[in-house]
Amino acid sequence: MTDTSITLYTPFEKLSISETAEVTKFLHTHLQQYGDPAGDIQKAIAYAMKEIPSPGGFVVVKRENDDVIGAVVMNKTGMGGYIPEYILVYIAIHENQRGKGLGKQLMNECIQACDGDIALHVEPDNPAKFLYEKLGFENKYLEMRLKNKT
View 1 (spheres, rainbow, N blue to C red):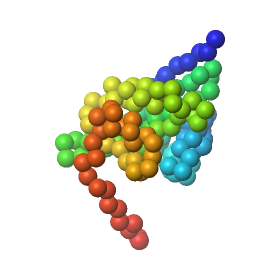
View 2: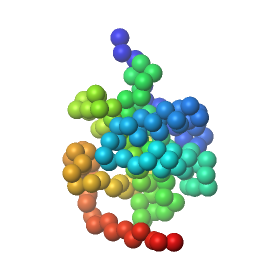
View 3: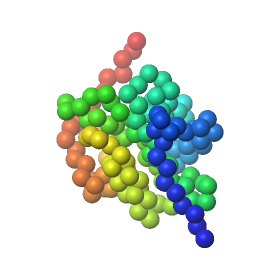
Protein backbone atom coordinates (compact mmCIF):
# COMPACT_ATOMS: atom_id res chain seq x y z
CA MET A 1 0.00 0.00 0.00
CA THR A 2 1.28 3.45 -0.93
CA ASP A 3 1.26 6.17 1.72
CA THR A 4 1.07 9.68 0.20
CA SER A 5 0.85 13.09 1.81
CA ILE A 6 1.01 16.76 0.91
CA THR A 7 2.50 19.15 3.47
CA LEU A 8 2.35 22.95 3.42
CA TYR A 9 5.31 24.57 5.17
CA THR A 10 5.10 28.23 6.19
CA PRO A 11 7.15 30.65 8.29
CA PHE A 12 4.99 29.44 11.21
CA GLU A 13 5.35 25.71 10.44
CA LYS A 14 8.84 25.54 8.95
CA LEU A 15 10.84 22.88 7.22
CA SER A 16 13.53 21.39 9.44
CA ILE A 17 17.18 21.75 8.45
CA SER A 18 17.20 18.19 7.08
CA GLU A 19 13.92 18.73 5.21
CA THR A 20 15.30 21.92 3.67
CA ALA A 21 18.35 20.00 2.47
CA GLU A 22 16.15 17.20 1.13
CA VAL A 23 13.84 19.56 -0.78
CA THR A 24 16.79 21.56 -2.12
CA LYS A 25 18.45 18.39 -3.41
CA PHE A 26 15.15 17.14 -4.88
CA LEU A 27 14.49 20.39 -6.76
CA HIS A 28 18.09 20.67 -7.94
CA THR A 29 17.90 17.12 -9.34
CA HIS A 30 14.40 17.10 -10.82
CA LEU A 31 14.24 20.60 -12.29
CA GLN A 32 16.87 19.29 -14.68
CA GLN A 33 17.76 21.85 -17.40
CA TYR A 34 15.17 24.30 -16.03
CA GLY A 35 16.80 24.54 -12.62
CA ASP A 36 19.25 26.73 -10.78
CA PRO A 37 22.26 26.07 -8.56
CA ALA A 38 21.39 24.43 -5.23
CA GLY A 39 22.46 27.59 -3.38
CA ASP A 40 19.84 29.65 -5.24
CA ILE A 41 17.14 27.08 -4.47
CA GLN A 42 18.11 27.16 -0.81
CA LYS A 43 17.88 30.99 -0.81
CA ALA A 44 14.33 30.81 -2.23
CA ILE A 45 13.35 28.38 0.52
CA ALA A 46 14.96 30.60 3.18
CA TYR A 47 12.99 33.55 1.75
CA ALA A 48 9.73 31.56 1.90
CA MET A 49 10.42 30.52 5.50
CA LYS A 50 11.43 34.10 6.46
CA GLU A 51 14.84 32.88 7.59
CA ILE A 52 16.15 35.98 5.83
CA PRO A 53 14.37 39.36 5.84
CA SER A 54 11.47 38.88 3.41
CA PRO A 55 7.70 38.93 3.07
CA GLY A 56 7.81 35.09 3.27
CA GLY A 57 5.88 32.53 1.29
CA PHE A 58 5.48 28.78 1.55
CA VAL A 59 6.78 25.40 0.39
CA VAL A 60 4.55 22.49 -0.59
CA VAL A 61 5.98 18.96 -0.53
CA LYS A 62 4.31 15.78 -1.79
CA ARG A 63 5.68 12.56 -0.37
CA GLU A 64 5.11 8.94 -1.20
CA ASN A 65 6.29 6.48 1.44
CA ASP A 66 8.43 9.25 3.01
CA ASP A 67 10.18 10.03 -0.31
CA VAL A 68 9.72 13.45 -1.92
CA ILE A 69 7.97 13.08 -5.28
CA GLY A 70 7.02 16.72 -5.80
CA ALA A 71 7.87 20.13 -4.40
CA VAL A 72 6.94 23.79 -4.90
CA VAL A 73 8.54 26.98 -3.57
CA MET A 74 6.30 30.04 -3.58
CA ASN A 75 7.58 33.46 -2.48
CA LYS A 76 5.50 36.47 -1.49
CA THR A 77 6.55 39.58 -3.40
CA GLY A 78 5.36 42.08 -0.81
CA MET A 79 3.45 43.85 -3.58
CA GLY A 80 0.00 43.67 -5.06
CA GLY A 81 -1.97 45.02 -7.98
CA TYR A 82 0.87 46.34 -10.07
CA ILE A 83 2.91 43.16 -9.46
CA PRO A 84 1.34 39.86 -8.31
CA GLU A 85 1.46 39.09 -4.59
CA TYR A 86 3.20 35.73 -5.18
CA ILE A 87 5.81 34.30 -7.50
CA LEU A 88 6.09 30.60 -8.12
CA VAL A 89 9.84 30.15 -7.93
CA TYR A 90 10.22 26.36 -8.32
CA ILE A 91 8.04 23.35 -9.01
CA ALA A 92 9.27 19.87 -9.84
CA ILE A 93 7.85 16.38 -9.99
CA HIS A 94 10.08 13.31 -9.68
CA GLU A 95 11.02 12.19 -13.19
CA ASN A 96 9.48 8.73 -12.54
CA GLN A 97 6.16 10.26 -11.41
CA ARG A 98 5.45 12.64 -14.28
CA GLY A 99 2.29 12.37 -16.36
CA LYS A 100 0.12 11.33 -13.38
CA GLY A 101 -1.42 14.72 -12.64
CA LEU A 102 0.83 15.46 -9.66
CA GLY A 103 1.95 18.82 -11.03
CA LYS A 104 -1.68 19.90 -11.40
CA GLN A 105 -2.44 18.64 -7.89
CA LEU A 106 0.45 20.63 -6.40
CA MET A 107 -0.43 23.74 -8.40
CA ASN A 108 -4.05 23.59 -7.22
CA GLU A 109 -2.81 23.25 -3.63
CA CYS A 110 -0.65 26.36 -4.12
CA ILE A 111 -3.40 28.37 -5.78
CA GLN A 112 -5.68 27.66 -2.81
CA ALA A 113 -2.94 28.66 -0.35
CA CYS A 114 -2.38 32.04 -2.05
CA ASP A 115 -4.48 35.05 -1.10
CA GLY A 116 -3.47 37.01 -4.18
CA ASP A 117 -2.29 36.82 -7.78
CA ILE A 118 0.57 34.55 -8.84
CA ALA A 119 3.36 35.16 -11.35
CA LEU A 120 5.80 32.61 -12.70
CA HIS A 121 8.57 32.38 -15.24
CA VAL A 122 8.63 29.49 -17.69
CA GLU A 123 10.80 28.84 -20.72
CA PRO A 124 8.86 28.51 -24.00
CA ASP A 125 10.03 24.89 -24.46
CA ASN A 126 9.17 23.74 -20.92
CA PRO A 127 6.37 21.12 -21.06
CA ALA A 128 4.93 22.56 -17.82
CA LYS A 129 3.89 25.64 -19.80
CA PHE A 130 0.79 23.75 -21.00
CA LEU A 131 -0.22 22.94 -17.41
CA TYR A 132 0.06 26.58 -16.42
CA GLU A 133 -2.09 27.63 -19.38
CA LYS A 134 -4.74 25.01 -18.49
CA LEU A 135 -4.82 26.41 -14.94
CA GLY A 136 -5.52 29.91 -16.29
CA PHE A 137 -2.08 31.51 -16.36
CA GLU A 138 -1.67 34.00 -19.21
CA ASN A 139 1.41 35.25 -21.00
CA LYS A 140 0.72 38.94 -20.48
CA TYR A 141 4.27 40.32 -20.67
CA LEU A 142 7.60 39.62 -22.24
CA GLU A 143 10.22 39.50 -19.50
CA MET A 144 13.43 41.42 -20.02
CA ARG A 145 16.41 41.39 -17.68
CA LEU A 146 19.53 43.46 -17.34
CA LYS A 147 22.48 41.75 -15.66
CA ASN A 148 23.84 44.65 -13.63
CA LYS A 149 27.63 44.57 -13.54
CA THR A 150 27.93 45.90 -9.98
